[in-house]
Amino acid sequence: MATRPNFFIVGAPKCGTTALYEYLRPHPNVFMSPVKEPHFFATDLGEYPFVRTWEEYTALFQESTDRHLAVGEASVYYLRSSVAIQKIHQFNPEARIIAMFRNPVDMVYSLHSQLLYWSHEVETDFETAWRLQSRRRQGLDLPSRSKGAFLVQYEDVGRFGTQVERLLSVFPPNQVQLILYDDFTRSPQRIYDETIEFLRIPHDGRSDFPRINENKRARVTWIRDLIRKPPPALRRVYRGVKEAVGGGGLDVLKSRMVDLNTVRERRPPLSPAFRSELVETFRDEVALLSRIMNRDLSHWT
Image 1 (spheres, rainbow, N blue to C red):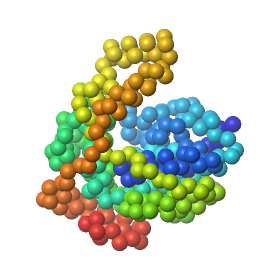
Image 2: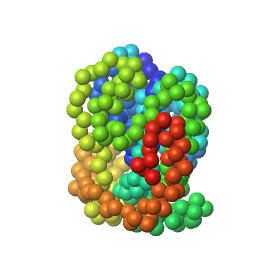
Image 3: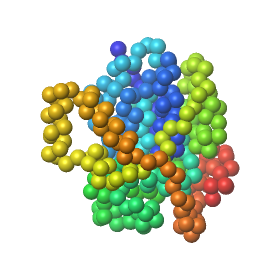
């Protein structure tokens, strides 16, 4: 019988959530949703949630067993959502919540790069995309392939102090683990050990923590768009072939095409003037997060 999830990695994007998800998955006492980001409880995010029905959500955990003491999922926009945390509490008030944060200036820049890679953003210059936020909030100049205007509201995603206040107004501090990306990258072993203790499960002796989810860019954008968001006619052909011959080979081919069209690289630095503007934008949010965590985050500003 499937076990209901009892812990949630709720965000934030580009703050190490994918790495933590991958590090926890092999643990013999952990069951992670095979879909990393179902976003089931973020019902205010329009068409973005991958899983929308109760039957689909519970099916994600149907392979979990009694040996899985920690059953969880990781949806990075739960923090951004105005309703997800409360809905998770209604679902399981004893749940353990993990939230990860980094300098919001670095996060929004990294997020822009990822959205470009996934075809949810089309403006390649981040400063231009940043200045489009007001128009996009009104439904103007939205990427045609985007799943929601909220995805390109970069400032809202980076309001970490406000998001943690909301989180701690619902869940008590002893059920919440707040992780700084700086600490995670400096010592993934220490953060992993603390997370295992927080989840109240035996340690599995893990000591290998490879780098995961590096910055990526599509070599050829039209190939990226064709693979990620094929036109209806091509989708119908794909479904027909998949039904006729099985999807394994086609999925492998699609994955291989994505890999061949992917470049892993460092992003160029932001201009000093624009970076200073972003620092000022997030200064109060950083100060609030600093007070909540009782950590000096002045180096972020």
